[in-house]
Length: 603
Image 1 (cartoon, helix red, strand yellow):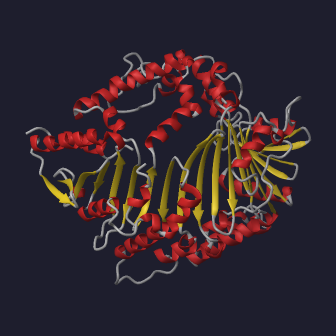
Image 2: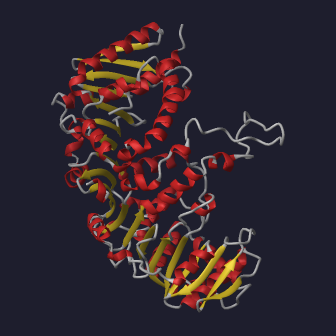
Image 3: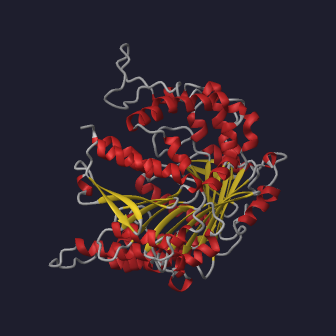
C-alpha cells in the first residue's frame, strides 16, 4: 500500500484556494468567523495592479526576480508537486469566483464547524474531474472513506488518518454543488450549505443583523473581507475557562476569575471586528472596524480610544522623515481608566503600583509617580523616524536607532527628573550629561557598549524627547535643514489623509522611498551582507564548519537572493510612494484605516 500521507497535500489544495453572487447568502447564520474573497478573478487583477507587483515584474528587476523565482520553483515547488503528484497551478486556476472560509456553531456539537467554499465558475467540469481523481486516489491507496448523497449532491467523507491522533473521530467532507467546491468537517454542515445554495435553507449569514450592517457599510465593495463575532469568542472562552476550574477550589485573594478579567478589560462591550481590503484608481485601502458602541466602551477600548484633537505633523517635522506617528490622548484620563481596570481585575493591583513609589523613594524621598509623571504629562505623543543615511556600510546604519519619541509635558523638567529617578533603579551607571545648542542631553549606557547606543533624553519645545541614538536627538535639535519643506505642506499627504478620515486623534505616515532606498542600496553594494551577518552564528546541527577556524559557516544564499543583480534604486523608486493611517472614534465604534496612494508616476 502506498503511503497514505501523500494524499494530504491534495486534500489541502482542494481546501486552500479561492463570487458566487453573494458568498454570505450560502453561509450558516451561526457563523462567527469568516474570511472571504468574493471574486478571485477580480482579486487577481487587483493584485496585479498594485505597485509592488508591478515593481517585481519590471524589466529592471527581471534578473533578480527571475533567479529567485527559479530557485523557488526548482527547490521547493517542484519537490512538493512531485511528492503530491499534482500541479499547484491547476488548482489555483480552478478558483474563479468566491473563496470563503469560516467557522460556525453547530447545535449539539461541542466543536466548531469549519467550512471552505470555492467557486470554480465556468471550470466546474474541471473541478468535477479533480474530485473524480481524488476518489480514484483514495481507492488506490486504500484510504477508508465513504460516499454520501446529500440533497442530490455527491459527497466524500474521509476519516482522519491514524497518525493524526488529535483529530481522532473526525472526518472531512468534500463535495461539489454546481460550480462550488464545498469542504466541511461535519455532514450536517455540508447539508446546510447545500440547502442554502439551493435556496431551501432558510436564514443565512446575510440576514444576521451584525454581519448585514458591516456588509452594507464595509464589505459590499471589498476585494476581500473578514468578520469575527467577538461575543461568541467571549462566550466560548468563558465556557472553556469554567471547564478548567476546580469546582471544589476555594477562591484566592487577589487572583481574578476569567469572567472578572474579561469584564474589566471591556471585552464584553466588543461586538465584532471587521477587516476589508479595497482598491480604486487612487490606491489601496485597508479598513478595520471595531464594533464597540460608546455606551458599553470601557477597559482597554476606552483606554486606547484617542481624543478628537489635531494629530497632524507639527512644523518641525519635515518631508524627509522616514515615518511619523502622533497620538492625542489625555494622560490623566487614560491613567484613571487604566488603574480602574487593574483594580477591578484584582485588589492587589493598587498595592503593586504603590510599590514603585516605595522603591523610587529610596533614591528620591520626594518621588511620586502619579504626581511627577502622570499629572505632568500632556495629551500629545509623537514617534518620528529620522531619514536614514544615503550611504550605509552595515545593518546598524540602516536598522539603528533613528527613532525619536516625544511626550508633551506641562512640566518637562519635573517629568524628566522623575524618569531619571526610575532609570537609576535599573541602570547602575550614572548619566553622562552634555550641552548641545543650549539643551542638555542626558545619556545612559544601558547596554554597556558605549558610542551612539543606550538611552538619551532631553527637553525641547515643551516635549520630553527620548531616543536610542544621540545623533537622532542632535539632528532634531538642529532643526530642518536648509530648503527642507514641512511634511504638513505635502499635497500628497493631505489627499491621502482624506481617505483615512483626516488627521484627528491618531495619524501616521510612512515614506517607502526613504525607508527602502538606503536598504536597497546597501544590499546592492554589499551583496554578501546576509552571509557576513550570519557567519560564525550557530544555526543548527547540520551547519557547515570552517576547518580552519572551527566556526560555523553561514549558508550560501546567492542561489536565491543575488543582490548583485538588483538595479539602481533610481530606476525602480517610481513604484514606491507613501502610506498613511488614521483612527476615527465615534459612538458606533473605532475605525482604523491605512491607505497607500498610487505613486504619481504610475497613474
